[in-house]
Length: 96
Image (spheres, rainbow, N blue to C red):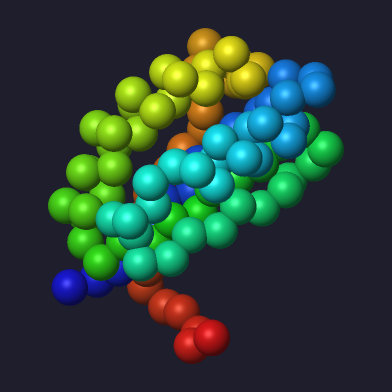
């Protein structure tokens, strides 16, 4: 079955950067086979999660929305959205 990766961007309110990173680290990533948090700028971060299947990704969507509600006070909006996200099937990858 092909692997699925999701990238979700978050923009922290001024002064909330460290708390946002800690909240990202505290999210239950047990459904994913790997995850990373990268800094895109001083206040913008991306969480990258890879899953064995789209079903496992879908399981995280449900819990992720409740978790996202709990950290909304840390986030600046992207227009009318708290995050910018996309997912896709991995078509090529290097071994690490």
